[in-house]
Image (cartoon, rainbow, N blue to C red; front, top):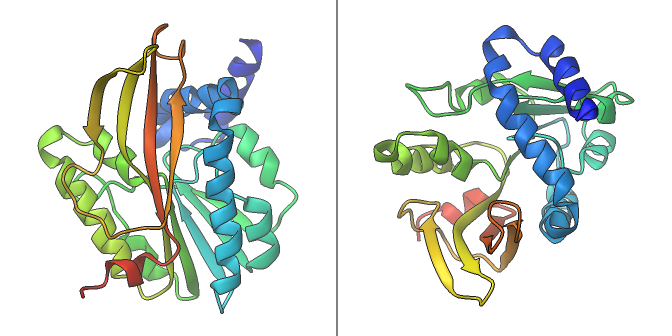
Length: 241
């Protein structure tokens, strides 16, 4: 508890006032990730591994932008910092443990931005202002944007983010959860939801399960499992035909 309070206090001081209201949710994600380190490990390893291997396919390595960098659980930030001239981490909140992790690198910076598409946020328009942008990574972000939107706008938020990524002039890597399912201890399906809200995505050979909430995390006798898919080259995958 004291450690959590120390992280919150340090993060609060470093956060621009307009973004401090997002710290409680960020703290919740960070705390859950620590509690469920074993359950989350396969998902995080696959996410980091995909990014690590995709680095080899990026010809020019000036600037990489990570959208939804969060607590950096799923981001091999050390590899990015060693490979790219500039690494830009973008999210609503950046907690002090992530700042400590990148402190030894002079070529990385964190930016606070609301990536919700307009009119609720600024979307991805700021990327056009980065002249040496060579790679964009959207890391487990799009479903979170949809979740934060009013239900009637959730599909539009998914479409806007994915279409904006596909329209970029540089390589784009997308990692996202597609749906969740809730099971009881007998393996009976109790609930499910389409996190893409009806958006049909191209086929991906990179798919896996993420046990977001094992038994006891959200309820004693239920577990929630997400289906995840990834596209190393989202622009190519999303291209018509």
